[in-house]
Length: 340
Image 1: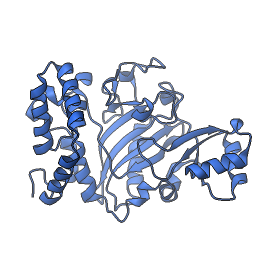
Image 2 (image 1 turned 30 degrees about the horizontal axis):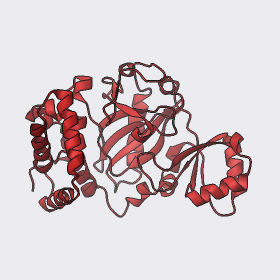
Image 3 (image 1 turned 180 degrees about the vertical axis):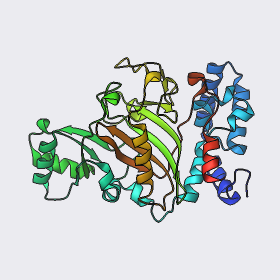
Image 4 (image 1 turned 30 degrees about the vertical axis):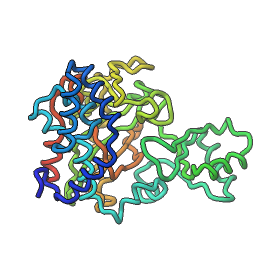
């Protein structure tokens, strides 16, 4: 057993793969960025980043995002990192069931009752059905079955379509095969950013009997179809009661005390229906118990939580000390729930 509690062979294989793919230029840029921000000596930061990556399983972007340059060794040890999260996924998410989360059509079929919205699949010859669906809902969201970080997600308004056969053909040719009804979010979420459906990422582990909520992050968009960072989105961590712990931030060095468009003070945000959210996560975690470690994306609607998607490669959302003043992360919660 390795010091982290995971098998040594997979860890060495992962490290070897990282070493082969390392982008020296990217590492240097990250080190320079960190050195400028925290008043450190760049060569020392480079050495520290490489040491942390090789012996402490800290991704280079983790090092930057979570301000490792200003944290003590004990404080660093409390942070969940992407390499460790990846090992949890590999160990606890059964490969035979991962496709149910990777394929958005398969996901909607399995979790249909928890979506709480209509959806359909684009097929050859069903242009009339697509038109009826779009006109019934006014605005629709289309998704490519396989995509991540918000890629392959599009939004259309029925009123803008003149030729439904051409529209249908375009969806088919571009691979936008899943159509969903647009989610109506709770007024408390719309107050921050009304133009984007703002999702809550709840990272959870189902141990076969109990669902453990490991971390919660609230994502906010900038009016685009997705709240992911590739669309200008950002996030803030939430405490156990669903309260924001500080301003918002992203992986590009942007800090948002207020939402850039609405002016809402991010630290004042309170996720509505937090008890319902926790109960909802427990229910969806039991649908495919073979995939135990999931990052659930949900939206609180006026009538309660609805499911957007589940990510078997859960990723990591953590505190940023220079923004929140909180110098500890969520790793102890992961250890307590999972036992590594």
